[in-house]
Image 1 (tube, rainbow, N blue to C red):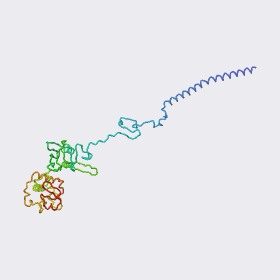
Image 2 (image 1 turned 180 degrees about the vertical axis):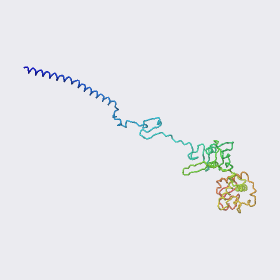
Image 3 (image 1 turned 60 degrees about the horizontal axis):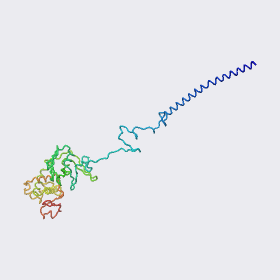
Image 4 (image 1 turned 30 degrees about the horizontal axis):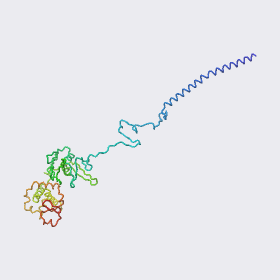
Length: 346
């Protein structure tokens, strides 16, 4: 009986121990649950803080979500005027090129100003004298006295009198076939080649493009005192006076052209005096009358005009002239033109 009582007591004590152990495990389990919940919440907070589609690894990024400076849609201080095509093509606005000059006349490589008022008269290009002078010599002094224009530079003194068939430059006489003209707008116009020659500039023409070019020269127009051969001038002015002293200026020039055409032709002597001294050509030469002739100012000017390259177009290439109808030339040579009282033959 005593042994049975001890056994019961031991069973009760064991039961009490088991109940105590069960009570101790509940706080531990709760603590573990709380820790797991805290970790879970922390993970959730970190996940919410991240940008969707972006990993936490800083070295691994999605380039599609980033913009480089200067890409379409980005406007910076340096690129505020740029416009680009949404499709990726460059659509920067480029202002149109505005032509402010004559594209068919280039002066030192640049289009001539429109106020030059280039125009064509019987195959001769005319331009404004004052505008052209400013293009070739920006500091030229230009004046007008009501009948003539004057251009003065350090190396040039030019006079262009309206209605005359020439421009005088440094004592030289440059032929103007259609005369110096005054436009209704008040511009004095002269042939382009004449004003270019006066300024020592070169004129070129490209038939393929139709462009005319004027290039400033580095030489000064030689003065007439040294340019004209005085011996040739002596004889040429006198034969012009003797043969056509009563003719208009271009009639006198045409006589001078015949003499110089012979000088240039290998069939005739190669000097003015030699042509006049040739047998059966100029009877007044042998008699001494020609040398004693006093030429008028107009005859001297006509001689200088042809010596400076002036050529009357109508009588171009003529080698003979006469004032009658039964001369050797009239019978044997082709008639080219008649100027004043003279007929000219080729």
